[in-house]
Image 1: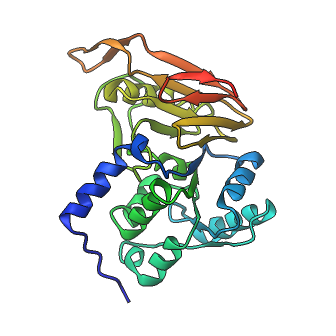
Image 2 (image 1 turned 90 degrees about the horizontal axis):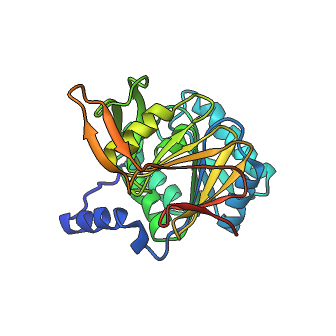
Length: 282
């Protein structure tokens, strides 16, 4: 049976407003955002501990091989202490509105998205009850949401699709779509240093005047309600903060220009405050 998904206009307005005001959500949870590759043990353990024995639901809908990536992720969480974890492949919009699917997502205290293709994931759950329930879990219930690779790219409202010319810094050159919208104060990129993705993230950071966070493989950030994140894993995290940039201009050919861009490069155990725009130590 498919549940009809009809939301009154006033409720949609409230949901959109809340999703765009991260700092106004006192009950926000934690995000575990992995740049791809090997998943840091400390990140997985922290995610499991944050869920406090509640159900962890793995959604492999970005994957081309969900029947493999789903069970693999379940075993990973179990190997690090999770007792109540299962996987659920959501194939299309209709399935994302099914009562059985809604019940499973609604009862989860932690949700994890595997890698694959981020646009594939959003085509399957974007604008469905599943997306709204994931946002509710993070923004209102204090739950944990995690993802790796494509599952990391979907975290921000502005989602990099992977299309565009990455050899130049040019406006309207990097293709983006709407992600899950868990973060609206930054843009997430993954496999960052390994695949040399600095041009596309820097282009968007300049064009949108919003911080870009590039997470390398085998590396994760643990993003907390105070809009600060901790780096864990083997690699580095790069932050392009363009909020205080000046002299932004575009040439006749569309090439971008901006001065006073703040660059931060972090490694494990270091913290970064999005609000303050700088590294700090705990």
